[in-house]
Image 1 (spheres, helix red, strand yellow):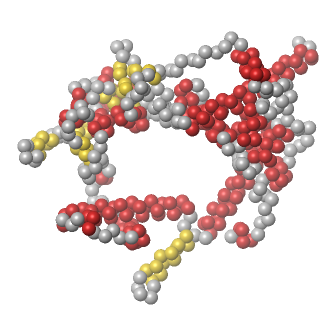
Image 2: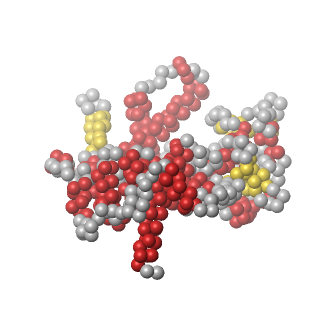
Image 3: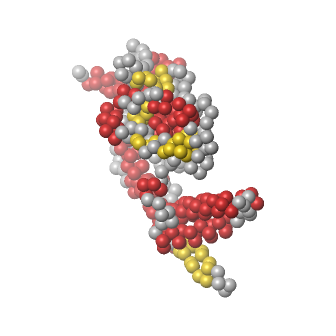
Length: 442
């Protein structure tokens, strides 16, 4: 092949690449709109999981597409440059890691002037500067941490302090848990003494916080406030009438131990894979007989289920561990056998029981999933039709839109000079241009 033919081939590659980048911009627009309107929420965990199933993208690449699509929604200059084929997707992908509406124009100039390697190096330097600012702020917060505890003139103990964000978040969570524990204790006491809860004045929040802090201190000294065995302490117990398990439309109740109600569908889901104890009541409502606790799915059968299914069976889900689901519920006469079981993750187990998705095993042993509207949810999506000449169709579409794309559309302005990343960051990054005073470094 002579030099002229090779030049022609190179120009064809460059022009087609620019066309593909322009088409990628449109694809990202569609992904962003699909994501905003939750079109993926048909049993999938996220838009990336839907792309992984429907389009065949690797999950990591799918997450990156969604990230870039979302970022371009707030970066119109970069979005327009990609839509025109001026910047490659690789450059835009890198720039969206650091670009903001305030810095977008400066970074766009970098993308137009440099190669993809230049852009990556600038972005790495930019992120280092951002990280330095974050580290400096974290060091400043750490240096300013303090907790003052002293006794006031009237004998009250005063507590005042400043905590790092992550430490403060832990304290806030702990105080909330302690407030809830105190509230439940007070509620139980009032019930025992016959006091009307509404008649007892609720302390203001600052007093609740003080009581909660005291409980946290006592807990730390006593190494735990709950004397129950760890295995029993965190169990969730649901009391369900047998007719409700067999048919959610039947009268009856499904309640938690604290009296909170759950739906019949939720109780069915929980009963799918749990320990069960059968209690018989007399006519006066008293318990007359209690059976021994038994696992709904025996350990050996559970091991076989995990070995067979190797993870959640819902189409497009890659979660490796899950819960055993009775295709025909045991309360409705369904057997606890391998053929009547399927492994589902927590999310998709809920989708089948509470969100209207249906699951059935076909005569050939394969599982069939139906959406709430009755449409089939295939294990592998159908391949969309592709025209005989997809490149020609793409070019014709861009011509119809008035988009001018040629071999030099995405050619950078770089003339071969050496890139000084440090100097470039000093010129471009807004933090690098700010004067540093001793006060700002405290």
